[in-house]
Structures are given as structure tokens and as C-alpha cells.
Image 1 (spheres, rainbow, N blue to C red):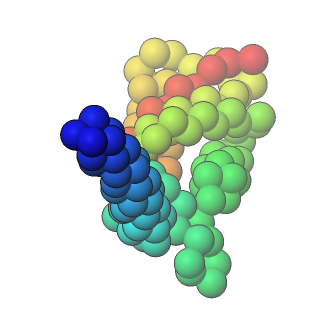
Image 2: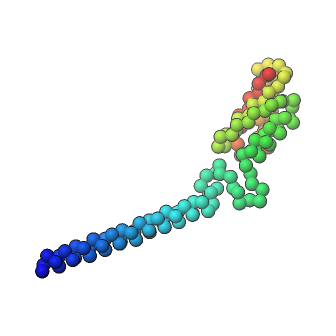
Image 3: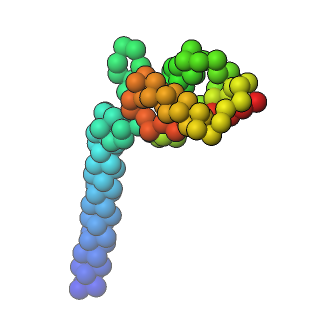
Length: 132
């Protein structure tokens, strides 16, 4: 008789333990989903480089590249600008047909850098002028 009673309590204990584990897993899953909702509800709070799509006119990296190319093309007679963006760093390479001395090139790069900073102040901009 004791064997049946002890066996019955062991079976009840196992069933109760498995049931509570299932409830615990659901609680962990719900907690993870709630955290994901909190993270995804406002992505700009998490990463400053994320694009805020909640605005009416979203800012995108493509728009910034186009703006940088526009500034380079209209500043002087530079052709074929290349623009690379990685996070908050921007690399701009402008091409010219003129021959420039090292001193003149540095002055031109500084002036172009100043114009780009005015147009796109949120980037750390590196400017390079190459001769074709």
C-alpha cells in the first residue's frame, strides 16, 4: 500500500512540475516579446544612426548621398563625386580636370569640407580631391 501511495505522489509531483515549467516558459516568452515591443516601438532611442520613419518626410542615407553630390557638383567644376557613408562618417571624393598644387588642393578640400558641413552637419566628413 505504501508503494502505491508513494508512486501516486511521485506521479503527481512530476505532472505538477511539468505543468509549472510550461507556465514558466510562457512567461519568459511573453517577457521577451514585451521587451522586443519596447525596443521596436522607438528605434531612434536605441541607435542614433537608425532612420526615423515616423516622420512625414523620412531622412534616408540615399537622400544624404544625393545632397552631398549636389553640393560637390555645384560648388566648383567638380565632376563625378563619389560618396560613402558608414554610420556617422562620410567620405567624399571629388574629381577635377584642373591640375592643383598640394597647397591649392588642401585649400580646395577645406572649402569643400566647409560647404558639406553646412549642408550635412550630422556627419564627420572627409574630403578628397583627385585629378583625372
